Structures are given as C-alpha cells and as structure tokens.
Length: 487
Image (cartoon, rainbow, N blue to C red):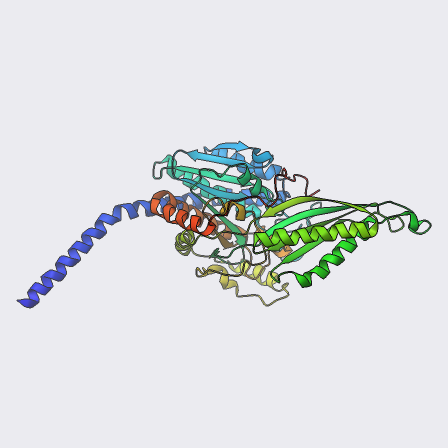
C-alpha cells in the first residue's frame, strides 16, 4: 500500500509538472514559430542577398563616398515596405529605415564602406582589380547586406502580427576611421531605442564579449616655404622635415606611454619633387587605448609633438580631428541570448572547392593557420579582458543603448582583417555563407527582444550599472562629419 501511495504521489507530481510545461508551451511555441519564419525568410532571399553583397563588394566605395552602396540598401528596404529617411546627421549616405510602431524599438546596424588600397580579385592569388583602388577588406559589403536582410525578416513578422513593436535598420557610413555612427548618436538618432544588434565579418563564429580600443584620429598639416633644394636651401623651410620630426618624437614617446596604447600614422602628402623644398606636408595619425580618458591625454601629447616639430623646423601647423570613438560597453545579458541563437544557427560548411580555395589562401599566411573546420564551429561565450587591437564606432552606440554583436566566419580561418585575403574571401560563396549565419542569428535575437520584455529589462539594468554616472560625450567634439577624409 505504501508503495502504491508513493507511486501515486510521483505520478501526481509528474502530472503537475506536465501541466506547467503545457501552460508554458504556447508562448515558447510562438517564439520558436517566429524564429522559424525568420529563418525561412532569410533562406528564401539567399540569392538576392548574395547579389546585393557582391554588387557592393564590386562597388568598393570608401567612407562617406558610398553613394551607390547606400542607395542599393535603401532601394531594397523601400521595396520591402520600410519608411526610409536619408542624409541624416549631415551625412549624405546615412539612412534610417523604420517599420512598425510602438514598443519595443529594436535597432540593427548596417555598414557598407570599403578600405583604400585593398583592391583584389576574388581568387586566392594576390591580384588587384584593374581600375580599382579600394576593396572590402573588413567585409562591410556583407555586414550591411546581412543586417538589411535580418531587418526585412523581422518586418515581415511584424506585418503578419507575429511580433509587435518597431524595427529600425541604421545605414551607418564610414566606420573605417570616419566615425559615422558617432555623428548619428550625437544627432539623437538612437533616442527611444530599447536595444541595438550588430555583427562583424571575421574568421570565426562567436558572440562578442571583448571590448574595443577607444580611438582619436587627426590629420596634421604643416606649412613651410618652398625653394630650390640645391641652389637655395637656406631660403626654404621644409614641411616634410616637420612631419618627420613629429614622427620621430612620437616614436620616442612610445617608451613613455601605457603599453596597451597603439599609435600609427601614414604620411599622406610629402612633396612632389626631391629638388623642391616641400612647402606642404600632411601626416594622418590614430591614437588608441582601452580607456577613452587615456586616449585623450595621449592624443594631447601627440599634438605637443606636432607643435614642437613646427617650432623646430620654422614651419606652421594646423590639425583637423577626423574621428573619435569610444571603447565598447559590453552587455552579457544580451550576449547570452545571442549565443543561444548562434548555437542553433551553427557555423559554415565548406564545399570541396571552397576547401581548396581556403587552403590556397592559408598558404599565403605568415603564421600557422587553424583548421578549415573551425569555420563550422561556434566558440563558447566568454568574457575577454583584452580589448584587442581594433576600434569601432559601435562603441559610441553602446554607451547610449544596450548593444550586442557577433562575429561570423566570412573569411577562411586565420585570415586577418584589412588584408587582400579578406577581400578575396568576401567576394566568394565563403563570405556569403558566413553572412547568412550573421543574418539568421541577428533575426532570431531580435525575435527574443520583441517577445521577452524581461530580456530588455535585464539588459537595460546591466547597461545602466556598467555605464555608471558617465555622461556620454563624443571624443571628436562638435565638428561636422569629415566627408572628405579619404581624399
């Protein structure tokens, strides 16, 4: 009898648990159904998205000059039923596409600028494209396309009343040094948004829980006096000497700054002929550090070096702030949700032909490359204390709105960003497959944000705690966008 009572008790418990599970199932089923619909939508647009991405890969337009690339995204969003505003924050190639109404308001970031000097054909041998200088060495042709595709998938769910709220796709120009998002943040374009989703092309699949380096950049311009370099050198004052003196002082300064600092420069103008003392020269500097306050103080020391160089060479100097970005404020709450979705989506599987391509690409690396199978794997979620070596204007967005992002394997494992190898991979099916991983993961994460108010609440609480009492202020001051910084 005692055993019978125990058995009945166990059955009763199981029944109650089953009842609870049944009660929870409808909500979870709705979320899963919405995610399945989003995945089906993205799968259905694979060829169209591929066409868009490769078209923008071919355009390879640099920062603030992405006229055709931006227009193509705007065209696709309008065709899908979005209301699109363009030319915002004094940036002709920016846009914000909106669909739906009310809360929550979820934003997805899209980038589309290329890098100068990285023209490359879509093959595993280094070879530039005739008549082209720039190339998508950071994969932003994939970035923008995946984000637009995810946004359209969410729009369809709102239209079909499977989700309620507002989706916004942000067309963000000139991430590569132009700080496009900083001006968009400064203009208040993210006001009222509950959470922001983004991604970035890479050589592995992982949700980003690693910060970025804050960055401040400027062009230093020196003005001297031209003269014949052989017959009347005493009458000249070389602007190039000033640039070289500045560079030398900054290089000596490296011994006396925090070791996490990164300073790099390129001489963008140094004269035209050896026998003419250059009366004009320009050098373009980046200063980076994990902490924004340290970036500002180190940058000020670079300015002092420029002033000293001008004084010592009898020239004059002016400098123009080009960009300035914050470090990345991480949000583990959102990252955990995105990680779950990334694991459901899975990584990239290469065909035999793609494996052959990948092996040839890897043979050009200076370091030993990981296995090609790494592209099919999802890295575990973990907080990384090292801020890494890169900077992004997503950092500024992350200081005004809870933000989350992932990296997807759009390049062969081991491929460095800003390389001809990255450009080559981005022009093939390897890049498109990785782009799909990102698009699907972002769309599924957006479904969670639309469907789970508690997720936004927890993310917002974490955001406020991490930000503390800091009042956001753009590192580039009140200057207008440097629309011609690539000239």
